[in-house]
Length: 484
Image (cartoon, rainbow, N blue to C red; front, side, top):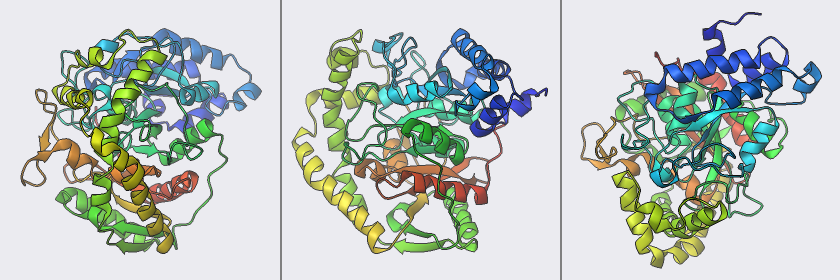
């Protein structure tokens, strides 16, 4: 069978694997098509590294396998990208910051290695908001440069996993890996029309779904996690199953699902975002989904007592430990911070090095975080909920500010507010409490920008949450591809 370029670019991860396993599609041809796509869309600045020779060699190895051997590889020939803060042996891991430019770790993160062992091919590393401490993926052009939204290159794609999201949305790859501390897989997924997943973290022990110790340039061991991103929730489930060894998703019917709507996360939305989200609710309600309004009046307060003290306090020790464990070219956080390119990230690291919020850390970790976790768990249990549902972000993609890093935004002409706060508000509670969160495409605004809906589930119910996401996605349908 001869595949056109457009047919290859349209393949989801699941479809691509099936075509390669069946022998209908050559992995080498597919990888070559996507490498050419990456080169033609270099203006989006989605990638920091492209491994042409390594990717083609890996594809040829897949093509050399027998049909039986390919059938044993659940990701046979699947091209992916990996966020540039996740260790990949022999390939740059720079976290988008000058002090680590060109750094080649000697180890590969376990989550990446499991995908490779299953037949995935890493095409390259994805651009990101410097050191993952931001949600725009706007970096100064003097270093990594801003990542651009494929639906409108003058707009942000979200972050910090913006490069992974853009590579997927722009059809450079069908899937990839990001990381998520406060919303960094889900925010860019929402703004680029794809799906992004934050798996359960809980308190970091057996509750943690993905285990990548010392293999990700960190912010916070309490909050950080690797997370898969793809154009469909079904593809995210495929990657999640390989990383964790989980079985097939349960099959769920929409009719009778009880979905909570937290009122604080439906307030203060951009009008065009609310219109799309409410239209999706109407569709889901017509299919039998039962919506349960939730006051959750303490959510914002409890979450606010947890998030920043943990992230700012843990960044110092966690980054220092990563530098040492990985034999990085810089040995101290101060040395790395002195070379930070982005003003917004440099300002945060001034606080990190000064020990800002350290006096609030113990209370945030040992008092307020358990209270938040109990509050959310009780809401699920008392209302017999399958999931919470709300717009992933309060607004659609905002303009890139090349000078100040998109530091403020306005919602429908209102007062300027910090961009990070505006986009993080809805994704942060899942991050601070450690529960799983999934963003999927809800639709497009009248101006042609993607809008995401987030589903949060009870701790440890990741596969069921993904099954709900698949059911929602089948009803709401995919978004049209960006015109590039």
